[in-house]
Length: 161
Image 1 (cartoon, one colour):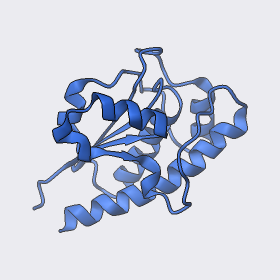
Image 2 (spheres, helix red, strand yellow):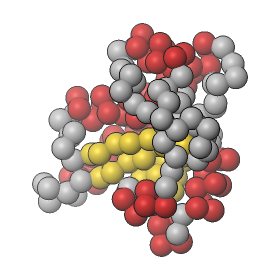
Image 3 (tube, helix red, strand yellow):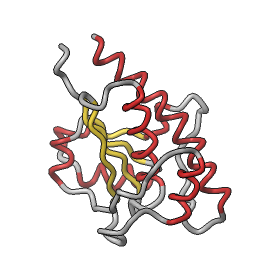
Image 4 (tube, one colour):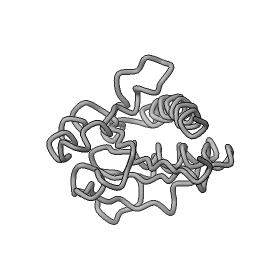
C-alpha cells in the first residue's frame, strides 16, 4: 500500500551525540531514497540532562564534515506516547535499551531494538563519544552510516510488501 508510513525514533542517553547523529544521517538517506513522505524520523534521550539543547558541537562538526546537518535538532526526553507513535524505537546501547524496556508498555515492547541490529559490521552497540576525543565521533558516524543503510533496506522491503 503506497500510503503506508514507518516512524523511527533513535534513542541514546542525552540526545546530543549519538541519536541526533543517527537522525541526521538516516534523514538524508531517506530523502535520497525519495521516501521522506513515508518514513518519519525523530530522536530522543532516556535522560533529561540536555532537553532543548542543540547537539554537541563535536557531533555537529563531525557530521558536517560528511555532509550532514544537525543544526536544527534539539534534545528531548523519551515520553510514554513515543511507544505508541513510533514503529521502531532504536537504542544506541544496552543501557538505553534496558531503560526503554522499563518505560514501554508491554504491548509496544516489540518495537524496541538495538540500532546496531541493522548493522553489517556486527557491532554490538554505538559507543557514547561524549567523554572522549574527536575519534569517538568519527566511529559513531561510521557505525551509524552502516546501520542506517541496513535500516533503510529493511524498511524499504517492508514498504514494498
